[in-house]
Length: 87
Image 1 (cartoon, one colour):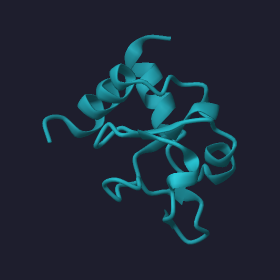
Image 2 (image 1 turned 30 degrees about the vertical axis):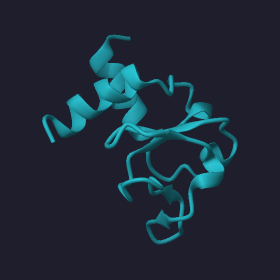
Image 3 (image 1 turned 135 degrees about the horizontal axis):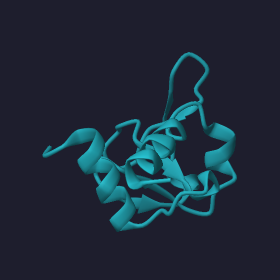
Image 4 (image 1 turned 45 degrees about the horizontal axis):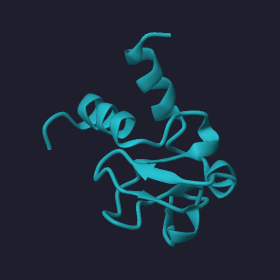
């Protein structure tokens, strides 16, 4: 899988993921690049409160380590560049 395919697959893991987030050891936001524990998440969105909001920036761009994708500054930065460009 090339990097673009990885980024697209990871993006699918950033919504409707409450169980996966709660099963994660770490989480990261690919908007503000903050890495944090799932216990720090206090806000959820969508009709069933299944999508995490970042505790730092309140954006729904959160990935958990249980997703299988690396929660590293490098990977989160690649996600940010792909999905948000220069923000």
